Structure formats: structure tokens, C-alpha cells
Length: 82
Image 1 (cartoon, one colour):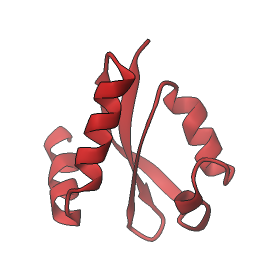
Image 2 (cartoon, helix red, strand yellow):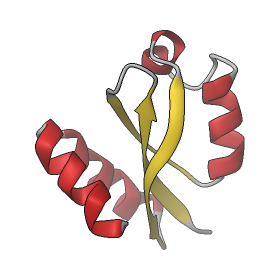
Image 3 (tube, helix red, strand yellow):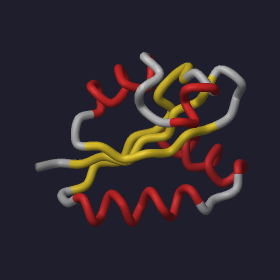
Image 4 (cartoon, one colour):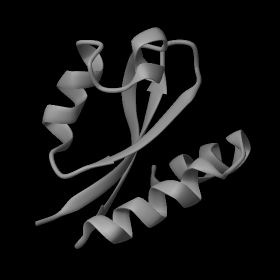
């Protein structure tokens, strides 16, 4: 089963990072205010970045790394993919 780490850019310009095995379903949850406490008050605007992994452990490890990054490091990561 594949997992992915994603970064959402929120309406206020902030970023939310998470991981999931079903990105489309997870996005629906975020849009409906049921995905995470953060995205209830910071509505998602777009998916800014996605990385795929073969295991949940790898995805969780990468999510933790990204969450520790500064805002500028996240912007650089997002821009490196585009």
C-alpha cells in the first residue's frame, strides 16, 4: 500500500503538512472541516506538494522532517517540485 506526505497551502498563506494513504479522501476531510484541527480554522486552498512512499513508517518520518522545516525551507521544497 502506498502512502504520501503532502503540504497544503491554506487560505491565509500558512502551510499544513500531513500524510495519508488516500490523498483524495483526506482532502475531502480537510475541506469538510474533519481532516485536522488546524485545517478547521485555516481552510486549505491547494495541494502545494506531494511525496510518495512505500511504507507508512517512511511517510511518517518524512512528515516529521518537513514539519521541523522553516517556512522558507518549505517554500523552497515546494518550488523545487514546480
